[in-house]
Amino acid sequence: MADKDGFKVAKNYQVDVPFANNSESFYVKGSNNLDWGMKKHLANIFDAKSGNTVMFAFDHGYFMGSVAGLERLDLLVPTLIPHVDVLMCTRGALRTCVPPTGNKAIALRVSSGSSMLNDDLSHEVVAVDMEDAIRCNADCMAVQGFIGADGQLQSIGNLSMAINAGARYSIPTMGVVAVGKDMERTDRYFKIATRIFAEIGANIIKTYYCENFEEVVAACPVPIVVAGGKKLPEDEALTMAYRAISEGAHGLDMGRNIFQSENPIAMAEAIRKIVHEKATDREAYQFYQYAIHK
Ligand code: R5P
Image (tube, rainbow, N blue to C red; front, side, top):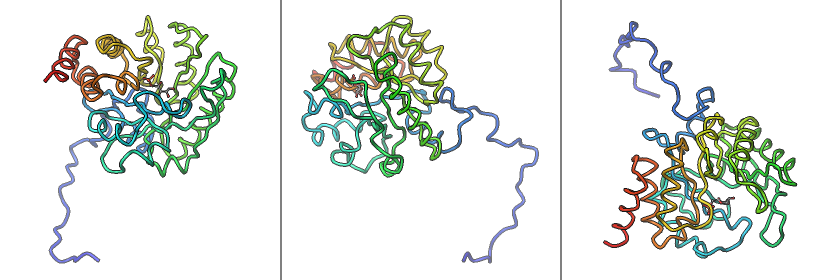
């Protein structure tokens, strides 16, 4: 019990000063009306100053097994942690290869069920229950969604299930727009898919960069982070990142363009320059070249 002796009588109520927490809206797009817990997770993901995020995706093993650059998660991941904001991974990778120390946000891949050994990647289930996402300290749950594909109904069911569970425990959900190999990669398609995910209730959307990207962003009421996609030469990947951020993306969620880079740390730092420091693609590439040659 606190010692009551020596306490002063409270008197500094500043009755003429308006309540300080009512005037500012929350900086993450579309999240102003969410509760404190949701906002806290989103604030862990999106930097308060830039409003943006650098996510490092290394969840590819969930359907591809071991891919080039990710053979030894235990060796690679700890080297990149200081250079990114969010780790996007499976719970298997998290528990085995991500040190529980540090303060990076976690985007936990919770959908699964496909593999590269057959052509049908669109049928998935929600494979991680809410309690385990909480045990993993997830800041958001990532669910793959296949709009216009055979597994569309199942995808929307999975996404809705995660959103419903997340709403109970204030954990945001990130809808990941999947594009099958025979599907269009047009702004028309991405406008439909991103908007459907947001209307279902996803708090963050991960999608691909495309023509008329500004319109995709404008029509989506929650933040969009852009997937890296297949490995590009570093200058081209940085140009794509620059265009995405300039046209309204709130971050990059890159995998292969970081971990298959000649220098993954320099590449992650170059992306940070664009995402958080308003660097142009040219400036970021100059930074990258300087970093690899010094
Ligand atoms: C998406 O479905 C994958 O699981 C990856 O998270 C995503 O594709 C990002 O990685 P990359 O930049 O290599 O495409």
